[in-house]
Image (cartoon, one colour):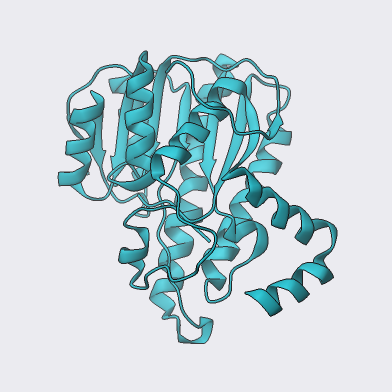
Amino acid sequence: MSHAPHHTDGTATAVPAPGSAPAAHPRTTHRATRLRGSALVTGASSGIGAAVARRLAAEGGWRMVLNGRDPTRLNRVAAQASAVAFPADLTRPHTDRLLCDFVLDQVGRPDLLVACAGVGWAGSFTAMPSSAIEEVVAVDLLSTLHLVRQFVPHMTQADSGRIVLIGSVAGSVAVREEAVYSAVKAALGVFADALRYELRATGVGVSHVIPGVVDTPFFARRGVPYLRSRPRPVAPERVADAVWSAVRRGRDEVYVPGWLRLPARVRGGAPGLYRCLATRFG
């Protein structure tokens, strides 16, 4: 169900910004994670990305680059977080490489990448325009894959670093009238697992943070308000807390709120029962 939202040349200021935060109760790698250094946060114009940037700044010790598609809002967040802004659309060719070069030039080798950029679309799959399908796949999945591919070699070379991918419970349980969004978030979750296995002999960790409904501009931008009675929306700051917990404790997977792990486990362990319950109760 939800969500996180959100890339030409950068501007703004540079400076630091980590410490300690609430735990969130999931799988842990026990891999030491560097708690200060260089960080990139995408989707930082608003919502979860902006909350993550502010949280890292509050922890202290991070030199940050923030990426987003809205220059005005991104620069505002960057000023609040004492970060460098790189406004650009990551779906455009070669922007991933330009952003990686910019990070290396401005704040040095990356210790942390938090990929928050995302868009959504709600409604009948057959009514979904082809352009919307392509946008959701490009923003929520492909741009993240390309960006991670740019940053991993620098992290593995130093034998340290952490990649945090912001998923959605929609990718864990599938949500009616969010078929494409559910599909790309499911793919992101599988990618997180596969990449973690691939990097297990290195000092690089991969965390998958899985929020339910988050109170951000995401729903307004997708054109359909959130009308379900459950799960209730949580503040983006709560997701930012979970991101910091994942970084600080080396966690593989964190659900926000934690009880959302239950329907995901039921679907995984008893898919027939889950489908029956989902059909009946929504």
